[in-house]
Amino acid sequence: MFQVLADDYARRILVAADDGPMTAKALSDACDASLATVYRRVSTLQDHGLLDERTSIDSDGTHRREFETVLEGLHVDLSEGEFTLTVDTCDTLADNFTELWDDMRVSR
Image (cartoon, rainbow, N blue to C red):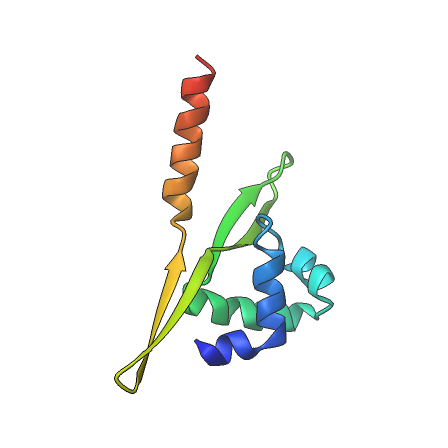
């Protein structure tokens, strides 16, 4: 995890995608990185459970992949000579369902 977060591009992607879902192209622009670099870092971040992928459909039916940060916090503890790392992530599916439910209740 420390190696993943030590990478400047990985951190930039996490920060950019924390504002909401972004395409690889938008991440490339926001992070001043090539698409190849973005896709490599996105893959690594997904492997470590720090980035979520969703597919959106444009009005013309075009599918596109979007990425969003799910990392909420990292906690490092040193106890009895050992490090313990706790990663807090949000459950985007549950959060989206809760938001949808709340919107439906308010609109009644």
